[in-house]
Length: 118
Image 1 (spheres, rainbow, N blue to C red):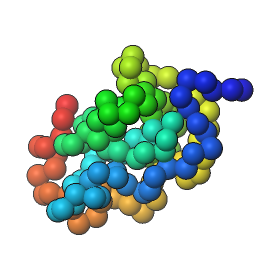
Image 2: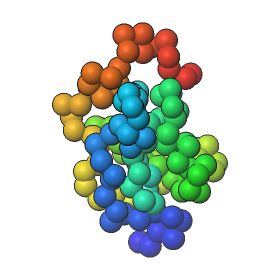
Image 3: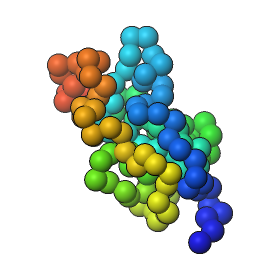
């Protein structure tokens, strides 16, 4: 099947965590991770304080993401704000299973639950 909708199944993820959170000083933190299906950018979800996955969509126009959480393979389309279909993406399909949620280890504040976007 050909995916002309901006999904590139052979592009690997950009890393094991949110690119922008990990680059921040001090390090940011995330609740869950999302992977861009077009370029592989890994960003934090809309519940996370910084919402980098959605910011990546706004800046790049890359509208489809896939969950980057173990046991999840669903897609989301930011342009329609609805679930979407898509192919299996290049490995790895999720962050390391020993990585805590929320993460990354050592950067999550004690009151993280009160800081989530709902």
